[in-house]
Amino acid sequence: MTLSRLARLLLAAAPLALAQWPAQAQTPAPNRVLRVAPHADLRTLDPVFASIVITRMHGLMIYETLFAWDSKLQPHPQMVETFSTAPDGLSWNFTLRPGLKFHDGQPVTSRDVIASLKRWMSRDTVGGKLAEYTAGLEAVDERSFVLRLKKPMGMVPFALGSAVGQIPVIMRESDATTDPMKPVTEAIGSGPFRFNREEWRSGARVVYDRNPDYTPRAEPADGLAGGRVVKVDRVEWIIMPDPATAAAALQTGEIDIWEQPSQDLVSTIARGRDVKVDRYSSLSNQAMLRPNHLYPPFNDPRARLALAYAIDQSDFLAAGFGDEQWWKRCGSYFVCGSPNGTEAGAESYAKPNLELARRLLAESGYKGERVVLSSSYDIAPIGRMAEVAAASLRKIGMNVDLQFADWGTVTTRQSNRGPIAEGGWNLFVTTASGGTMQSPVTNIGTNMSCARAWAGWPCDEEAERLRGAVVDAPDDAARRAATETLHRRLAEMQPYRVLGQYDQPYARRANVTGMLNAPVMVFWNIEKN
Image (cartoon, rainbow, N blue to C red; front, side, top):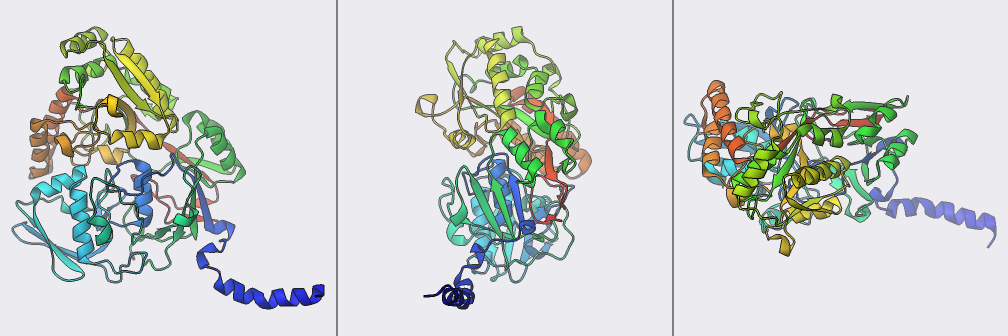
């Protein structure tokens, strides 16, 4: 066969070959692909099972919620078209937007919503509080359903739009009715992006494609609320645990966004003409040291108080976040600078008192037993703060076994309720967004409802009664007073040790625009020019 004849045959076959090639396999134009270095690898796909930020980011890519918070954390309808409340406040009626479809083509129905909300209520701090008020959930028709309450609760839209902890995403009924104590392994939602499982490479890359069947709301984007307009064809998360590698990739344009740049490199990358450094949330984040309340020594509140007196926040914050322009001391569980930012009851922990810490630890019955502090350097500030925690606790006589692993292993281990001999743990350092921690309703760490609480499982009936009083408060003044009373109890019981708060910058190429002020980073509304 001559070369010219071969060429003619290839040209003739090309249209047929392109027609048969799957649309998603075609490579989008470079300015239609957004490449992001996230803070961690994605291991768990179920945002109702796990409260970790990377899974929540994933969840908001592919799923939606009935309501969504704007940049001021106020709720607005998202999947909901209309809603109304009965005069007595004991029933809420909702109708879904028309045309909502899951990525497999199935319509979103009231049955999916009810199953999803029930699963979320069994897992989440906000959902659990709503469950206490709920008398029933009933489907009216395919698009309408009613929530019946035992007593009025004005925070229903706020709860249904929660963007923190385990988020109330709407799944297919078949996924939502599985065991809530096991993560769903499917990743089929109705949101603006589709999870590309075929191109997912654990430890290397996570890929999302624009959902061509998605119809955004008409309102302008604001935080997580409004129209989720996707302006790129694909988002790729490129896993780069090494900060120097991520910094170089950003400067050369191999990635477009670095979600959580290492604080010690921020000033260097900010000097680049083609790189911009900014904040994507107006509310500071919180760092914490979380004890396991199920086992000695931290099942005794005196041992937890010893943590409070052993710690100097500035040591942790300087190690984790460098220059003091990025952090500040704060004793509030509900974030200084937020509407709920009281430090009532925590005043005595502002400076360490090692002598008192040693005495409290001895009174708790601690006799030098091994204490496992689980951490990771995959998120460098967390690893560095864990080193400080180990050194601080050794000063008061604690036998600390500091164990490092990859972040996925650490977060998986956190759900282990067994003793350390069975793979359990005693302590871990972590961080949480200001949006998560700023309210008694959403703060996952101050939920002290025993087995239903977040990893660490603190248990205190009085704290839970006081948290309920915040929800029941009839007005803002009463809510502020109830919050202060609750905070005093929390300072006494120490569900976790507040390590202070910090501002997390992100870095982007100068040609990337449209980043939204939200509790977590989202990738609709963004374009590359």
